[in-house]
Length: 115
Figure 1 (spheres, rainbow, N blue to C red):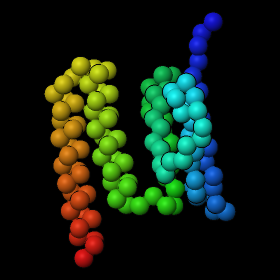
Figure 2 (spheres, helix red, strand yellow; figure 1 turned 120 degrees about the vertical axis):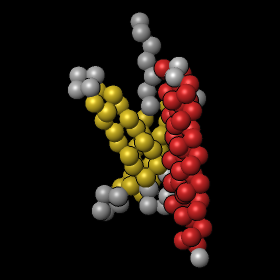
Figure 3 (cartoon, rainbow, N blue to C red; figure 1 turned 135 degrees about the vertical axis):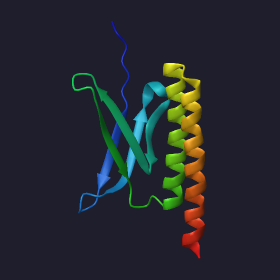
């Protein structure tokens, strides 16, 4: 019998259908109880269409500095995943460099907007 794994996402919406709370759990991955999150990005490769399908959600309480960190960390982990999947070290390094440059610009933008 094949083993399976379930990742569950639950999104609570306000009256305008804007996410207020997001909960996730993955018992096989050690997250047994619903755990709150402020955002998630889900990308799925549709083999029949040869296309990327995605769902991007974040709550009303997600702050810009948190979104900046979320995207930076996502880019860094995507580079790690890409390197493991393809063994393309130089291209993964380029992705990381792009992520670091973007982080610098994000920080500059945050400072500029605080004045």
